[in-house]
Amino acid sequence: MENRTIITVSCTVKNSIEKAWECWTLPEHLQQWNFASDDWHCPKATNDLRVDGKFTATMAAKDGSFSFDFEGTYSEVIPLQSIKYHIIDGREVSIHFEVTPEGILITESFEAEKTHSVEMQQGGWQAILDNFKKYAEAQ
Image (cartoon, rainbow, N blue to C red):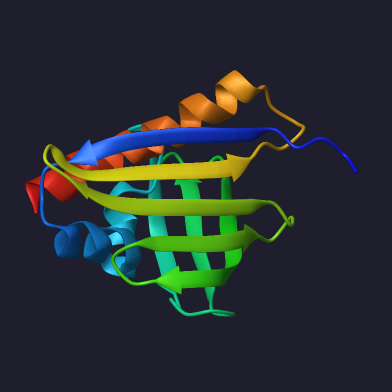
């Protein structure tokens, strides 16, 4: 069995668990935060949030130079608590939502891919999560 590298990123959102979940799962919210830098955006998203349901988020450079669809299929959905899915390339991702005295702790763990460095992947996923925090706290 091949060794898998698991990368974990997290943030704490000062809002209700219901609002954090809504911002994470509804496509109209997802489009507002699902990108790593200001020169990218998420012009399209779909989400069928149930076991065996599929999601797609189009990630695109604002200048039109590049875009790709981030796609996956859900393997577990526990409302207001956790989500697990497999990206189209087979890697697994898990997200946990935990109510803490400081706010909603969101922890996201994913299998690293082989093309980019672990540091680059961690930085990119953390940047997206930081965008989520900023957006969700403004709601």
